[in-house]
Image 1 (cartoon, helix red, strand yellow):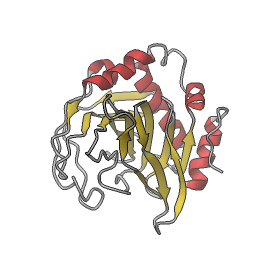
Image 2: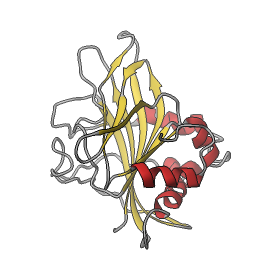
Image 3: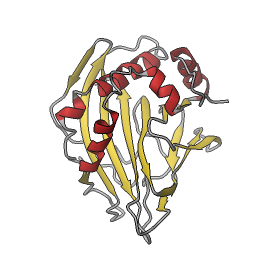
Length: 244
């Protein structure tokens, strides 16, 4: 069974990802895995998701996604933001929005330099680096702030490209907020299409660590519980590629 308990240790996380290709981590466990100092102003960190720009590259015509983006060079003990640049995925990995350079608004310096951002990067390097023979640092990390807004009569897709791989080596998806929405079920599949697990990230800091070379993932559409109130799902997605 994949880990979701609150007593997950680094070695548990490595074992899970190594065995299953992914590891589900509860909010309680995330709090144990990152420093209390990094989470001290979580409310301020999470509130920055209220200031994301409209994603203007949605080939399905949807206006339900907001985001910011940044790229970093990371290694154990080293962390540097790269000059602002476009996000690019080939059509092999993103059949909907791939094949073009997508210029998103940059992640603010307050978030890029925040202790929690650094802590998440360090945790990923410890977990994923321990699963990579000769990990050959530095790695390229791409940091995405996403908000998916749900409205009555419009399909709001957290993964509009469907079940997919991101075309990287490793992925972390962490829930930041979930307000007045139903569904949004995360599913993991092997390359043959067999289900390896399905679960819903419901609490801020609930997360999933993914080996992108081994498994596919997707999230079902969300819908408002009360169509007369704001409804959204905020997540942080950080991807890692072993070669710059």
